[in-house]
Length: 108
Image 1 (cartoon, rainbow, N blue to C red):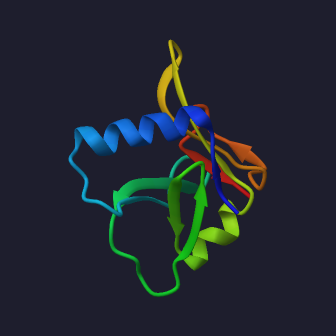
Image 2: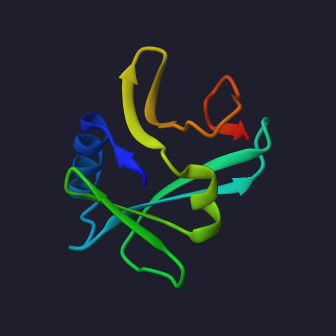
């Protein structure tokens, strides 16, 4: 399962409204090769399911992840930080053995 914090939920709802995302839009998360630690996170809004997608819902927010990425993201919480040291969505991934300083890439 992939979950969202209250902060991430509030920010996602706000961004979807600002961007006039259609009804039924969701957060698509994924993993791709790259970044300074080997794997990078992907995050975007979408409204089209693809074959093999895993669908989760937490706090009223639908989260979709492709089957391959799910293996790296199982148990992850999506959070949002608006602090002075950085602003944006944060992946709290229990599967990551190390992360880079910016938090955008990881290794397992």
